[in-house]
Length: 137
Image (cartoon, rainbow, N blue to C red; front, side, top):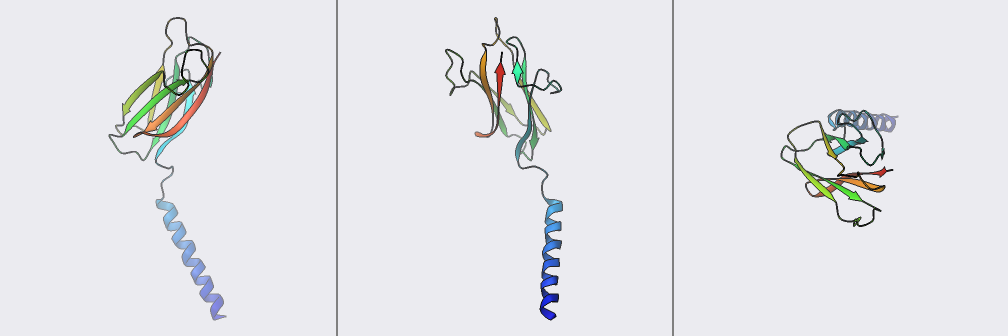
């Protein structure tokens, strides 16, 4: 009987410590979440398929990132003639200043984007933390 009570007390202590740790745990890991491609800055017109003349937005939430951290948003053309799929055709840098979300975009040049598969990569302090593929039709 004493061993059952001891086991019950140990389990109760483990359960209580788990609850205590869970309440102070962060809601999301450090980095970015909720990566959204859209045709508008607010991210309301979500899509991963765009027309050649569209302005293409990527938006994402920022989680537990120190002020001054560096985000690089890299845009790649994966299967477009004349483009190296391993080299971004555009990279923009953003220094984090405590915002809860970040949005970046690209505009087409005259004639629009060539049809094909594309990728946007989000790096935080030099390490890839997210990416999203999209299509131009």
